[in-house]
Image (cartoon, rainbow, N blue to C red; front, side, top):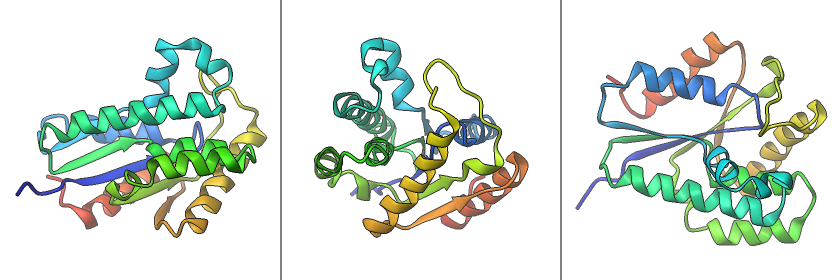
Length: 189
């Protein structure tokens, strides 16, 4: 019987340092075949289908992002790693809808993903307040929306009783903390 890999999701609002930390970890462990890194699904989805990006907070856009995330995570699983580190997760789409107040759509996405959410062993929520905000072509919400999304993550995790670790501080501090969190779950060599 194959052993289930440890799966860690780096989650949080845009420009909170997730991808920077993700890329730092990936570079540090590029020669370690036991660790697979799964990149953010939203950028893939919106690059292929720019029409979805126009209303990226819609149910259809977030459902497409979730499907891409699962597809990428399943591809990583086929490589039989010991650890999978994901830049975002299927939870991110649910939280993005949660932040809009569309409870019915949130419930739909949550029900569709209820089977997949337990596949993550740890969620690490990135606090945006210590990181300067920089918009781009995909992530272009106003700064207030960024903070509202962070609150929405905390509310979602509390409401669904999903444990998470909050990561804050400078990028260097975050990298040290995340290595400690991950190291407590799995010894990265």
